[in-house]
Amino acid sequence: MSSTPSSVEPGAVEQVPGDRNAAAMGHKPAVAGQEPVLSVRHLRVEFPTRHATLVALDDVSFDIAPGEVLGVVGESGAGKSMTGNAVIQLLEPPGHIASGEIHLMGRRIDNLAEEDFVPLRGRHIGMIFQDPLTSLTPLFSIGDQLVETLRAHLPMNERQARERALALLREVGIPAPETRLDSYPHQFSGGMRQRVVIALALAAEPELIIADEPTTALDVSVQAQILALLKRVCAERGAAVMLVTHDMGVIAETADRVAVMYAGRLIEIGPVGEVIRRPQHPYTEGLMASIPGLAERRERLYQIEGAMPRLAAIPEGCAFNPRCPHATERCRTERPELLPAGGSQAACWLHDPENPVARREVPRDIPRDTREVAR
Ligand SMILES: Nc1ncnc2c1ncn2[C@@H]1O[C@H](COP(=O)(O)OP(=O)(O)O)[C@@H](O)[C@H]1O
Ligand code: SF4
Ligand SMILES: [Mg+2]
Image (cartoon, helix red, strand yellow):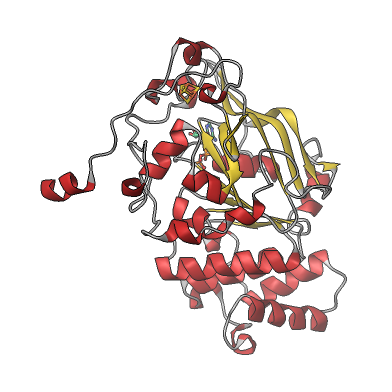
């Protein structure tokens, strides 16, 4: 694999919390009978260009239940941010939703005009991006920014909003918030700024939080604190979280379920413990093999050669076929849908119940001992 960074430490897999959601698979509601907060169906995003129409997202479907963290993972360029941006209608023109539907708490939102969508951002959908400074204004104190956000969405007077701002800052672990309310973003460290952004995202008690690489810019120790915070406050409030990251370590620590993307398609989805311990799609297997400490302990793991295709050159059939050690002629012509696979669902003909593609013997990753000698 050309670029799949990860920070999973040896042993991290044992702490995976995903099995408590073992029933939550595929794009069924995560808890039986409970309406999903977010429901994405057959989402297709296109970018028309002078030469061709590029398909950035192709037939993407998933749900997120109240209180659930869905991790969305994949190499850079897989379509993770595009998925989040499509949900919040922040696709960069000429990118647009060409087909499919998005529902927020049962209400269709993909076809809303911008003026009808604006009130949803912040109030019903909170957003956290990689760089806290994209969400914070350098010109106003964090107290003013929180108060303004609260008053824009909730019926509060100035005093009530300031009290609520203090409570929020306390909730996200800002020490002595009374003394920090009048500080400006540049007076905070990166980790503290991201805490403020989480407070802002939570301010109006949105039902859905979209967090796109929220800890990528932070030190590893701060990263763990921020993820724990995000997970805790969302669980307490019953908010659904879509956590976009290229880092399987972040997913292992935080997500209940994981959706793996490749070339604008969702290729595996399942409880995080299942996907990490028993990946079902050959791409996910390769992704896991890149995690230090995991590769040595598991069978049938290998490094994937090559790179993800550009949008203009997505192969016919299974988009992964040029890199897949099991690919057959069928994989080069017919595109697999998500199929039940182990404890998850995988878009791969290895799992066709009628006529499965045969798994080939794959040379394993270089054995640990050999690697140590080679160093
Ligand atoms: N404004 C744009 N115009 C055309 N293609 C884009 C644009 N933004 C992103 N893309 C392409 O869409 C694909 C998905 O991008 P993105 O969702 O940002 O990936 P990631 O999984 O790293 O978040 C990539 O191939 C990227 O090059
Ligand atoms: S469908 Fe074929 S090419 Fe695609 S991942 Fe499965 S075996 Fe490999
Ligand atoms: Mg991205």
